[in-house]
Length: 283
Image (cartoon, rainbow, N blue to C red; front, side, top):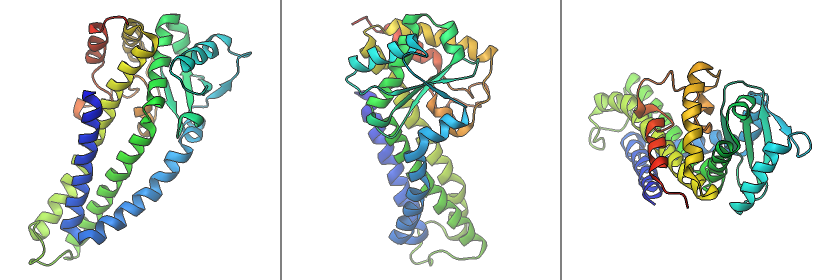
């Protein structure tokens, strides 16, 4: 419940930041224009995200006959989670990882790499799949799209502020509470940064929720904890050539070795995730 409330508060903070930035630059009109453009830009990502990311990683759909073991695990856990059977894909990649995507429960996808199926036991793989199904059940694709839309609108407003500062535009001094050109420049620098920090915090809170939700589906938090321990080591030995725009989808951040601080990470520290799971009791 704590992470659900945290997500709501962070989305509220992101919305508040949007209203503040828009009001300082161009009033309600500026907010509306930026938000509409951000919605348009993110609509395609939300609606076609599964096709885009699957093609990006050359994922191949499998059936019960072509991959009976992984298919059976997904089907069994989807039934336990009261979810429609998602489509199952395998990524030809040795780095062990997995992700879920799709705009809703009826258009969901679970994808795993060849590497993750080689190194995990059945219990550990069930923990990973349950985590991904929890993302689907929690509608995390929709939530991340909303966050991306608001953050995108803020970035657009910040760009407007940059141009206004360059050409001496913006609101008049009587209306402007942002300190004129200096305020516009400061906003252009710090508003997108603040939006990115909040957006990453939302992503991290959803990972904690998916861990807890996955443990609830399998009734065994230790399977996922053990899987995360293996994935931590393996991802460092066999790094993945992943795109930053899709890093938030994976169960383990494929860019973890490149992240320079947790504040800007899409995932919580693995040590913290494992500790939380280890502290749970089997259901």
